[in-house]
Length: 284
Image 1 (cartoon, rainbow, N blue to C red):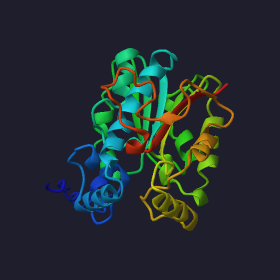
Image 2 (image 1 turned 120 degrees about the vertical axis):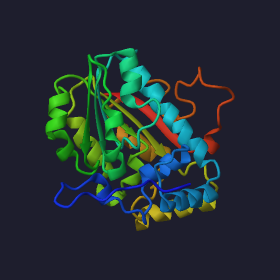
Image 3 (image 1 turned 90 degrees about the vertical axis):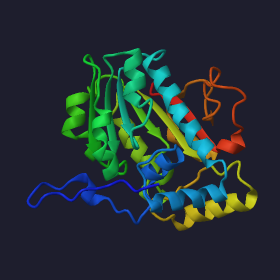
Image 4 (image 1 turned 180 degrees about the horizontal axis):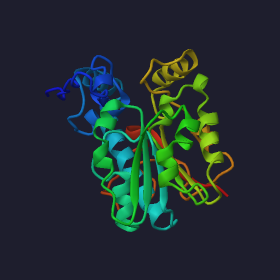
């Protein structure tokens, strides 16, 4: 597989997103793209992805099921829950069934703000801005760890009305925030800015279904600090803390392969094969 081509910016031109891409260091968005079969990744991402697959051979299944969870969660929120605004943080590289694709197929007036901190995602952001005429989309180059920057960003304020319910999408992103970076505080600050009737949809990798020795190694990594871009696995109880004070939507906290997956191809992957929790909850 060839690496994506990045062109140098002309002399005197504004910096291009590709100028920030470090091809020697794996990035979660590009590694996820590799697992999903995409081409927007570099050798470092593929090496990292292969190393993780060696330790967890069904990681590609987990990635695919996580993406399907996103699609079903958005469909529920735009359909049954009637949400018309979405804040999708940790967007990743555009692929099929992006949040606005699913939401606007149900409610063309839906408005979506995407947030990611990977310059290659920024370089492809135009694919995330193909809104319906009735709705709107916007993209913010920012980090989940800076919730105030996101919440006060002019693009968010232009696109979303924070006096009306918003669905906060944190799909496969929280496990990149370490304990020292206060993940629960970050989520709390985001939710505090959203009105009652808003929702949190999140998924998170877990060590609950890993062999005991591997699970203990993951817990030790969490305590000692994981390298940037690596995953901080958490237990079901630790994941549940992100939903404190919210009302969980049935079926509650389950494997992403099982969340409202009745219409998905059967048989479903096992919880062990996926090892990712997912849930959706409403702010009362």
